[in-house]
Amino acid sequence: MLIATPQSMHFPAALPLQSGASIRGYDLSFETYGELNADHSNAVLVCHALNASHHVAGVYAGQEKSEGWWDNMIGPGKPVDTDKFFVIGVNNLGSCFGSTGPMHTNPDTGRVYGADFPVVTVEDWVDAQARLLDVLDIQTLAAVLGGSLGGMQALGWSLQYPQRVRHAVVVASAPNLTAENIAFNEVARRAIVTDPDFHGGHFYQHGVTPKRGLRIARMIGHITYLSDDVMNEKFGRQLRDTLVGEEGPGAYKYSTQDVEFQIESYLRYQGDKFAEYFDANTYLLITRALDYFDPARAFDGNLSLALARASAKFLLVSFTTDWRFSPQRSREIVKALLDNRRSLSYAEIDAPHGHDAFLLDDARYLGVMRSYFDGIAKELA
Image (tube, one colour):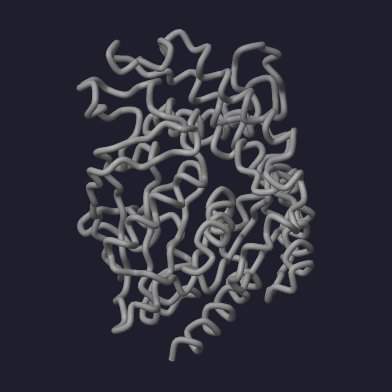
């Protein structure tokens, strides 16, 4: 069993941000798994998605159900084998799992940042990660790996630090968000900022949390992570068991407020759980970073020109039922890389699970990842 140990690194120097602002005196939480080899060439950076953290793999000693969010992918003998690679998971700036975020104190004012935490982008996260690697004395990554928003960071690494990345593995991701995706994010944000307990983002000093808004935001997000097939298979139009009584099986209460369907109960459970541990300002920051990511913007929308800077080898993976980050979006990246004659592999997995498929145990998907990382290990041998 892989035992994980959280670590933290303090950075006193200011980090310039894309917005023109900067942040200084910040901390980054991270974890490492495996051993760094003699020439420091076997490092794999794992970038996390919206509500994940630096706890990528393994468990915490003495804590039940503390598996890392990608534990099926990373560890001894797993597709990203920590007997071969030194794997690093980093919690991004602005998140709420240890790295400096809106709930922490601004060293320049002595007050909690709250809504005054500076806007951060995917590019800013990549710059912060690069600083951490500098301290760890890792100049070149064997691979950078991420799914969803993490995949955007992997793509960002290949563009911002092309000389430091040998392989970029981009899973269930996209070169930018569609208008529909931005719309989903905006509805979720409005649910949070219109919660009476939000207090303009300074709810910490009021001793409250905008849980109602967070619940709705999570429910909206969760709908987009699942495919229609999975929803129908898991829940269909099933009613909660509590509704089956004297009126007979399948009877409705015909209430405008009661939870009657199983899918309603499931979404409320997910919303309630999320609201207990996630920070509202962090949700706003990270969804905005998703919205802003668009490397082709500086090239008049020409993704081929944008990716001309990349020199890494690529693996891209998509899932047929993922409508949030559809295979078409991955194919856009594939085409742009082929236009630049870059080395790449592409796998489109016929999986029923929607966007969440990148976190699940699909034998074909895990097989693709294992084969690719075995190839990277052979290069290092």
